[in-house]
Structures are given as C-alpha cells and as structure tokens.
Length: 356
Image (tube, rainbow, N blue to C red; front, side):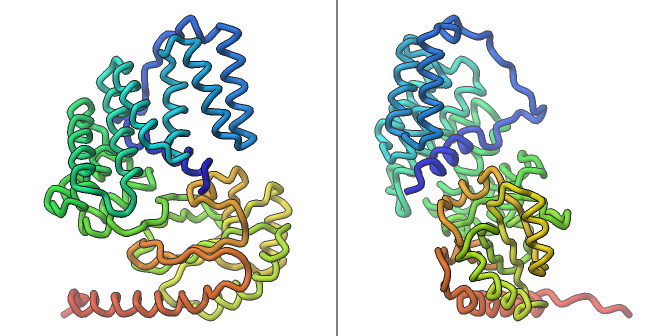
C-alpha cells in the first residue's frame, strides 16, 4: 500500500470543490497553543516523521500536539484523520472525523468535515459497499450540501453513492450539480460532466483526474481526450530499465500514429535542462511532462519506475504495469480497436450533416 499517496489523496479529497466561488476563505485568529514550545516541537517532529515516511510515529506526534492543544487542534485532527485512513484504520478515522465535525464552528467547516467522513465510509467499504454504508454516506453528503450549497465535492461523491444504489436519475442530477459548481479549470470538472451523462461509468476504477502543461506547451487533461486511449509512462533519464524501454516506446508512438491513442511520458527528473536535452536527443516526439515534485506520481501511487497505465476511451483504468518487459503494445491494440469501433458506432448513430 502506498501510505503517503493515500494520505495525500484523502487530504485533498477533504477540500475538493469546496470554495464558495470567491476562492477566498476567512482565517480565524490563531489560538494560544500555537505558540506553546511543546506544541511547536511536536508539530515539527510530526513533519520530520512524515518526510521519513514513518507514518505511525507521525500520527502519534500529531496526537501529542493535539493533546497539548487540549484536543482542539483542527489541523492536528485533520492530519491524524488522513493518516488513519491511509493506514486503513477506518474506524479510528471515522471517530476522528466526528470529533472534527463537532469542533467546526462554521457551516462551511462542517460541510467539509461531513464530506470527509462520507469519503472515509466509502474508502472503508472497498469495491462492494453495503447498502447501509451507502445510505450512511448519502445522509452525510445531503447534510454537507445543506451546510454549503456550493460544495461540489459533496455532490460529486453523492453521485457515486447514488450510482452504487442504482438511483441513476439522482446520480445524474448530483454529477450535473458538481459540474455546474466546479471551476472549469479544475481537472475534475470534465469528469463530472461525463458522469452526468453516464453515471454507471463512475462505478469503474478510474485514473485520477488531472491536468498538466506538457513540454510543448499544450494542456493535457485526461478527461478531455475525446474517446481516445491513453498510455501514461512514468520514467526518468537516470533509470536504466526506463532507457531500455525507450526504443519500445518510440516503436509504439510510430506504430499507432494516426490512431485514437495519446501517449504522455511523466518524468521524475529534477534537472529540467538534462530532461529537455534527453527528450530532444532521443526523438521523444510524444507528449512529455516533468513531475519533479512527484505530485502526479503520488496521485497514481507510484513508487517505482518504469511504470505504465493504460486507460480506455471512457477514462477507465484498464491495466497497471511495472518494470521493463511489460506487454504494453498488446493491451493497446485491444483498447484501440475497441475505441475505433465505438467511434464508428457514434458516426452511424449521428452522421455529419450534408451541405446542399
């Protein structure tokens, strides 16, 4: 399990789509405990332990800091909650989320806390949530949007919950609300629109929604690929197995040129100049992106390279392959054939208008 990536995912989910449209929030006055040397030391220790990937110990340090704050440190509790969920201690995470809800004093804060608890319930339920879990999550999300009508994240998650419950009309409405409220700049905006058209798609394992600027200046949004298959290749110039795979990647790019396929290579290189020179020298003509801070890699749970993901024309994550020698080409052929068949079906169903 990728503990850090799960913690980052949950922490980001807690605040997904929760702005009120202004993009601004009001920061409360700092409580007295934040200047307590013991509190400062405990928080610093927790930060250090997080960097060392010692998550159990980091949780203990955050708990120590919260104890110094007499149990009222919301920042500590949110970090504890994220770590508990990442470590799959869902019962503890849900209890912590309840405490957070009780400490929040604003409707916005309560709304985000309710969204986070619903997310924990869904995370704990796995691929086949029970009806009772779904109903509990739905009730929390309804309360979340009551507290904050612009909480698009709550609408989005409720759409998934309702899809699981086979209430497809309600799911369509929830996803449509999420799409309407979310900023067009948010990479999940398009996904909400797609799910509003086909809520059942939300039940599949989807790759994280993201948007990045490639080396050539173009914007890549996974959900804007328009029925094309996507191959994501995580690599680095200093990675020996990655370099061994490079001729194979070039072959794929050439073989499938003109086909409904988009390839994007995501580099771990810290040295931008070295990366650019390597890309140019090795004729890597497909989309290139440098993930120097590993933010995107964390979203995918990547901790080793080369690492590949194939994503079908509906955005569904179809395969994950690690290391050299992976049969990437064989999987792409099947997905591309399916994408071409879908395009033909759409063309027959909706033929272009003829000019008289």
